[in-house]
Amino acid sequence: MEIVLSLGGSFISDRPHEVRRLRGVLKRVSRNAIVVVGGGDLAREYIRFAGLLGLTKRSLHRVGIKATLINAFILSEVLDGEFFDGDPRRLRKRGLIVTGGFKPGWTTDTCAAYAAVSSGADVIFNISKEKGVYDMDPEKFRNAKLLRHIKFDELRKMTGAERKPGMNFIFDPMAATICKRHKIKVVVTNRITDVADYLKNGTTKGTIID
Ligand code: UTP
Image (cartoon, rainbow, N blue to C red):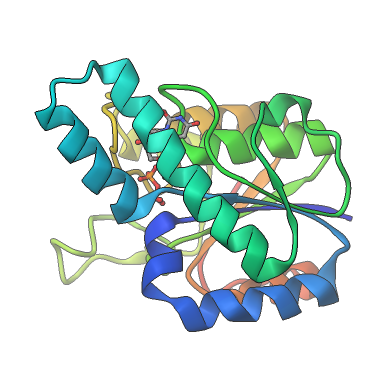
């Protein structure tokens, strides 16, 4: 079975122990997996610095892409997977593939959505610092509630349409549109073990979007 993981850049830098468990989990659950790695703070820091040098918005997106690719390269070494730097819509390779961003203005969630379409995966695991999707920003509101199951249309109402280099979403609205169109589910979680749990019995401690 094909699976796709969208790994947040901040997740890989903040949770190295969890990341190291990924290799074992992937070995157990699937021989074919595409891991798309985000840029996290590394991308944001480079985008900030490059912005001070007067780069255009498009160039700043390209800087962000490079940051995702460095993270992806590191992950490919950790996971002993094949590093891929190219268009996720043309990704036809099998095995364990690790990749990052591709097109200025997208995010790695969008790359993950396209990778799921091209590989025929019916689920994307969106693994980031957040436990799942909340009804309010959990960093600002202490009474924010974790939502266990939401529809893509509800997610759309929660995220605006504006896109700036380095902008942070739970799951990118453009990626959500692609997933909705192709009936790909998204599991949002901060636990690597949820990948195995979900594939075994359809459960997660995070949020299912469909
Ligand atoms: P990320 O996909 O890492 O965004 O891309 P993120 O929301 O910060 O993800 P986390 O925090 O790692 O989970 C970082 C930036 O790189 C550019 C965009 O500017 C994006 O905000 N980027 C990334 C692209 O322009 N195209 C891509 O395909 C990927």
